[in-house]
Amino acid sequence: MKLALLRHGPTEWNAQGRVQGSVDTPLSAEGFAKMSALLLPEGFDTARVYCSPKLRAVQTAAYLGLPDPVIDVRLAEQNWGDWEGLTRDEMRARDGEDAFEKAGSLRGLEFRPPGGESTGEVHARVASFFADLAKRGEDAVAVAHAGVMRAAYALSTGWDLSGPYPSELDLKAVLVLALASNGIPSIAQLNVPLRAR
Image 1 (cartoon, one colour):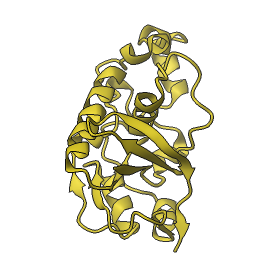
Image 2 (cartoon, one colour):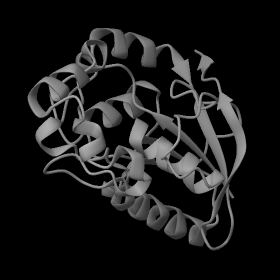
Image 3 (cartoon, one colour):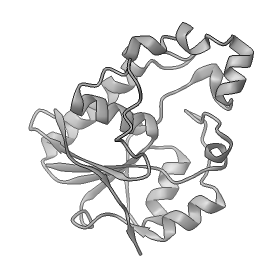
Image 4 (spheres, helix red, strand yellow):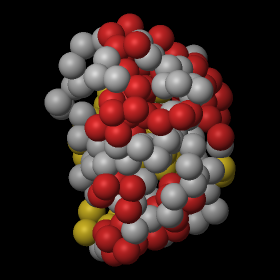
């Protein structure tokens, strides 16, 4: 089966470079306009739709014309704890220039923002979602977040997150995964553009 995974549309905090994480921010005016002008890639028009519970993802699904999404908390963005609402510069100003290293940024899945969720925990819940989805055996669409897309890419390729961010992964496009019967993902198509309405 195949899963088309995409990130929510733009928000004000995206434009400001602020970490949203578990904060329930809405789409910006730009986000509403952008998402309402787009459609899913061909072949997924009748697929079951799953969605993060965060407002920005739910609104994205609605403006893309995706009816009755199944809300799944495993598709929520990584909780960034004390760093939510801050820019990277503000995080460093508050917690030191080595704030990310102290939080485990060089240790891949062990990275945990202060008071937040580890990257490994995000990967575990995304892998659980994939396993349950594979049991259904039906093509699907999921509207989620950057952290979920990174987790999906890592689970599909073996990237351990301790190296540079993969330049080939475009968070503005759709990541199409093939899920084996046990939920193990592989990349079927990378960076599939949304269609103009």
